[in-house]
Image (cartoon, rainbow, N blue to C red; front, side):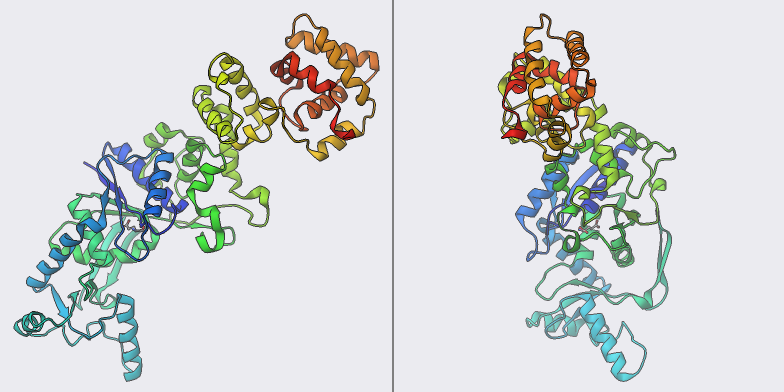
Length: 496
Ligand code: GLU
């Protein structure tokens, strides 16, 4: 049975690249009828925070990815990681490195070795460690005396590691390019590659689907699998997500744009964002772009993952384009076409957060609320639009768009008297529904010898503050007689 895991490090908010990794793992698990697991890799004690863990869990919940088994916290497994390292030590597959003030990381060691090689004018030799072949009895003795040591994997200087990545194909690396990697630091802290391998073995992970930045680590991890006598899983590395211009999407350069919760907080529908993320580096065989979760699960495959990097197309200098255009387009598609029963609770949450919600919308006015939602959603891009552009449907306290006032009210000074006059016609209507409203508007315009558009555009701005919106006849019907008449009679914004 397929078992995959999403293994975020809780050192910041959930990055959209990581969210995509979670999605692909989730889709693969569901597609194959397997299990989707979550492992929080919180071993970097200095950088991991509970706040970050919570924000990751919250983001996953928003996207709808609940793990199938209890969440694993990597730090809980440190004893197991240490035990694995000591086992390799006992088996002679690893050695104690007593180099004082043991370098903290492999890259420090590499740098030191390279520096030494440079000074000696020779080739660097990654096996050039005086403790590599220390007599085991001597090594035991020094350890027993309390001398500090790191544990390093003894990597054979000959041969190579090779694996077939499901996305990037055959990957090979000469052992001569891999140093004897540190498994345990001298303070007993297990290092990343050891922890990941031990946990993946313990969790019986069959497929490791993760970011391309881990491709080079994989060779080291395979050596650890071999040393531990375990079969490595299948690896599938995902292409990077780049900003326009080719830079890696990073927190430092792209701020909130890379944080998943930004999309939730700015009114994205989870399904739309999931759909959008799925197409960042993966494509279905067909041209279809709108795929709901069930469809994604059905057609998802590792073969469909692209090798070329994906681009997240936004314009950092244009506030209106704070997100990828396609993401926004997709969100609008979802808002426009999703089941009304699914949309209504999302709109309710949005209105609640803006203090525009009234309990009646769930009771006596439920039908009305659903009808309004259904009509106004046609032109909206995010859930925020329901409380923003749509505010006038839910409150008397709405703003007037200055450009709309100029274009549709100030330019037609007759409207100042016409709109209150039209209000009286509406007040007198026997049947306040679409057709009679339309006829009233039409005959009013004939009388005044003006175009219907002049009246209705003016009414739209006067009644909703906006230049665009649903058909104005429908809007008048939805706003109802009292509110329509009141707004058309009231002192209009261009005079105030
Ligand atoms: N914790 C690693 C990260 O957040 C992922 C490790 C893995 O998937 O193997 O980049």
